[in-house]
Figure 1 (tube, one colour):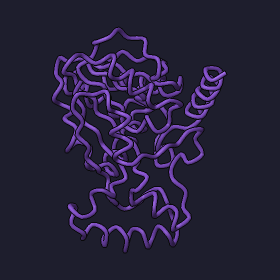
Figure 2 (cartoon, helix red, strand yellow):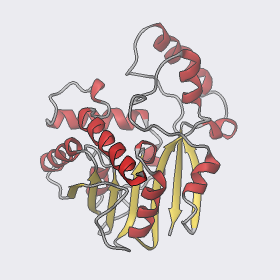
Figure 3 (spheres, rainbow, N blue to C red):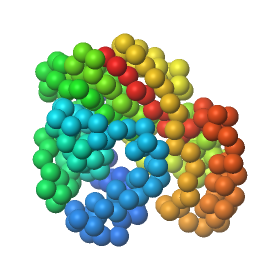
Figure 4 (spheres, one colour):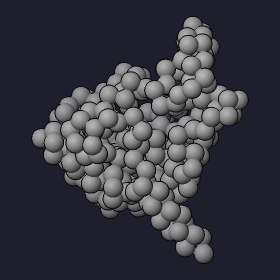
Length: 258
């Protein structure tokens, strides 16, 4: 019965992400066009300004990189531009169709497949890097996905992952301001403390945790709440030394070695 229930939930997750394209609200160009992918890239790396600083997208030239939950391929394409041999999987057919268009438009190669990240169809010790940014919190069995990531990594290989921080500033602000989080209606949306995330990744030989993503001005929300967020909260929060507020980062990044 447990396996059957898990299968049902995975189907619900697949259906949800087939219908919801991440950050679709901000794009100005037709879905699947060059401008569409440029809009997604610009917006993602504006709100996640920390990401190119902590992830060396150009550091895997000639190496095999797997992204679980690759979506439209916005991050994966950066690894490909850096010369990596990239593979991307996603439970959503919509996501993989978009990722294929993205790579074709940009003249880049990738192995892109519809696949459940909790049951990867790859041999043990296949990849130098497994990248799972913002996916573990949306899957049916995050521990199984973490274990699969570990299995397909080569010895000494890297895992880079991100989950949402239950104690993070955005979760707290969302409750205080009564403004919902993105994809709050997804079939699964889990949050973690730093210790819980470490425990989830306990199979890795080395684990480094770095809380990231601090407030930047919102382009998604409008109205009086967005005005006060942009003009007061963002500026005031960012005056506080990072050393004091780092545990409150909305994204808990993990850098692990097998």
